[in-house]
Amino acid sequence: MSWDKLQYFLFVARHGTLARAAQALHVDATTVSRQVSALEEKLGQTLFERAPSGFALTAAGRALVPHAEAMAAAAARIHSANEGGSALSGQLRVSVSEGFGNSFIAPRIATFVTAHPELQIDLVASSGFLNPSRREADMAVLLARPRKGPLITRKLADYSLGLYAPADRHDWHAAAAATPLSRTSIPIVGYVPDILYAPELDYLGEIEPGLRAGVRSSSILAQRRMIAGGAGIGVLPCFLAAGDPALVRLRPDQAISRSFWLALHRDVARQPRIRAFIDWLDAEVHKGRTLLLPE
Image (cartoon, rainbow, N blue to C red; front, side):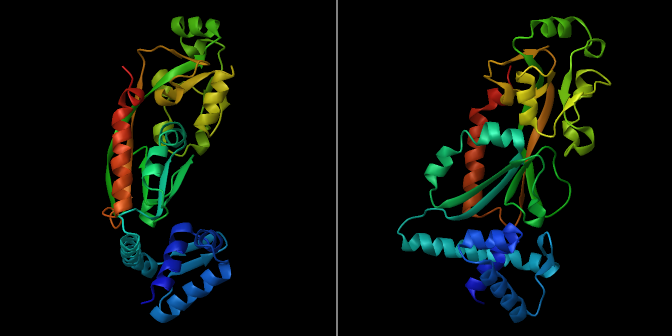
């Protein structure tokens, strides 16, 4: 079996479209398409369902992925041996929530990048998650433990959320301390309910039953900016608000608890690049535990 053809297959499986796979491989999309079609013809199987939105693995394609991953890992080891070292290489794609990715992982990832300069790292930090079960990402940090799929899962960390207000609105600070928010005219900032991407984000009712947001965004980073800018008060993860002089926490005795869960496909769990990133992330979470769970 030609490793070249399997490599093209693997990049399409990871990236989902010919254009993105071609960009990662530094070739044109026609070459990728030709190689994948040649592999399908050789195997006598359809590996992808073609659609306008991209390429989706068939059952035969999903069965082939772990074998292609094993060959990729072997190729990386051969490359490292030829280079006279044990450097990690290849692609690592991690899907995380927008807030955790932007405010916790991104500021710290330089140490991992420096330690593994040949590794291509994709940090997908967005409102929503890629699915490790469908091999859209190597691993994901989720807001709830997944119950289905060929995944290895465990808790990564607990974290706290609190009620925050703009630091210069002392009238709101006093009103929120003395009066239920529903009886005040203070605008509430929060998520758009009908496009909430995880039920764990529906937490305003834990501040006060029936509390609803009138200033809304699907982005927690936008909510932080709106609160800091004076648009209202709202709930933020403590690690996201920490150290921002434009924000002040209200009702510090009132905390909301949530957890981050690590999920990865069992076929990639033993790959060195996966283990290296998990070890690094565990260490960073341990060092930042007081930020995630302040006293």
